Length: 235
Ligand code: CA
Image (cartoon, rainbow, N blue to C red):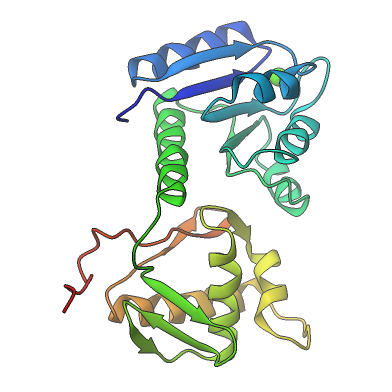
């Protein structure tokens, strides 16, 4: 990280908060810690950190209401921390607008990697890109990758549109099912996987790989950077 990123940890277990703080400081971040949920939204409004590591179960106010409260005025990266892996599906369904989900127990190393990843994505989203690598033409149902047209099926197009509508956000398979067909037919989650597989193969053939599988959860879109290999030189 070039400039020191300011990360807020909202966590009521002091040992865990201290451990995370130490790792993040070692990774070059500036860290603030809140041990309660109440007042957290106001704190964020006042101090505008670069990312939040947000425990769900907190005294005062829970992580869900804090996430909603922050999203009302800011798109800063939020990583939700939960003690139960089964809860992640429910959280995704709530559409809180969180950027990532981490399940306890976790390795602090992994948390640092995830924090760095959301900070990178946020920096990328904020940076003005001269040429967008992937452009969706809604009217013509057409996709251009680095200016070259790419033929997709309607389902693949809708899938790409849904994923790329919120770069970095993780979509569950059940959320993507709704995007596949306009007639809302009932399909299995495997159908989503096979459409994603075909879509990724087509994108890979033109030199981009913007769709990442999130193990056990679903998929997310990460916009290809300008440094990507297949960026054509300007004529
Ligand atoms: Ca807790």
